[in-house]
Image 1 (spheres, rainbow, N blue to C red):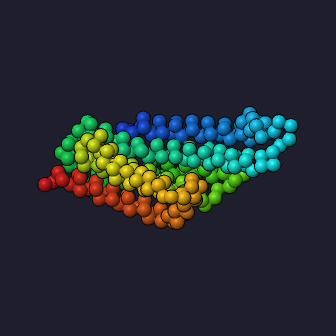
Image 2 (image 1 turned 30 degrees about the vertical axis):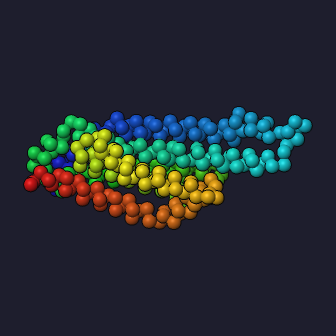
Image 3 (image 1 turned 180 degrees about the vertical axis):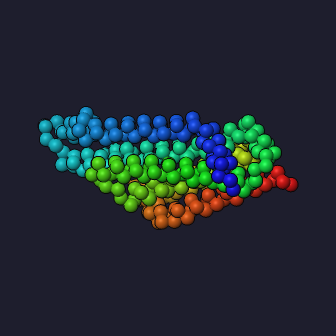
Length: 260
């Protein structure tokens, strides 16, 4: 494979998605800034003062359970501050789906099938692009979560990292499968609907069934989700690798159809 042609195709993909991934980085930075301001205000500013004033009873004394309530609220605030920007970092990877949609709208795929570039090279370009975007998204999210945990004093627990990886795997699956369906169906809307049916609908059904179980409490549901994430976490590299292999194979056969 000639390096120049390969890098040129990768550059094309990045150039087409420039608005998406630049917007993703801006969204991530804005979310991180807002969450940092919330955390600082809770620790040193007005939010913390207001909560402390609310916990004081009418006679000026502090309720016995006030410290526990404040600590629970602080932990909830910390989880929000930690996870929201980490999830927003995946917008950088979702730009790969935007490229597939643009190629379909502009009928670029028809032109590709008339070029001398081999299906293997096209598939390799798609794989390289997705690996690059996945790596950047993971680096942004994981670094941010580690920094917040270090500064806040709560640390960077395995449970939090497991939840991040679970979200990371689900969003990665959505993006990878959407690229396949958009190119397969040659329609952005139909491709996204098919992806929703394959990825999102089963998760929604499982969540609904779990919520209908008698005696199920919100805390127990959250604990079960954390346990599932911790169990799944060691296997997430294999799952993501499998999805990337699926992407490469799907792209190869989609481009190879021109040879028939």
